[in-house]
Image 1 (cartoon, rainbow, N blue to C red):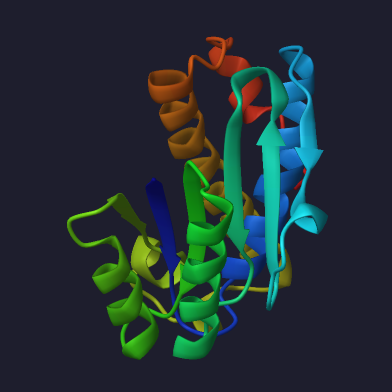
Image 2: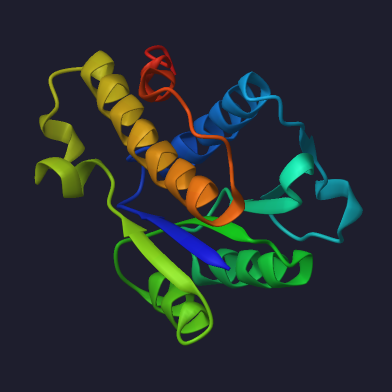
Length: 174
């Protein structure tokens, strides 16, 4: 299982990034002729967890949409294991029990890649951003960065069709 950890403080766009990532996955997969199926209902899930299968690649991707508390991260890790996902994307705070649990879960079993959020990219708390529209632009950049990482994993490990680089940047209004 490849794990992408999207970390950050409260209210910096982690969950928004994951929701937008799901939409980009559907759009880009459809462009390449792949079917992306929401198979969440096939599993007994607890919490805010979504599971999608790229049918033609037989690849399952799990999305943990909450991760502010250790109990949420723990449940999402259990959901990911139960569903035997190939790629697991989980939000988590930058420090504390949740991120510690996620790293312990991944240790020696899975590949994990840490992605920072707005504070990590710019080194400033979000209150220093000029206005909500600049915050939205930065969240869109963040989503594109995570999408590029997911696309890399899909291409490298699951033979997702190579795409025209410009496809990755057509989502200006996430």
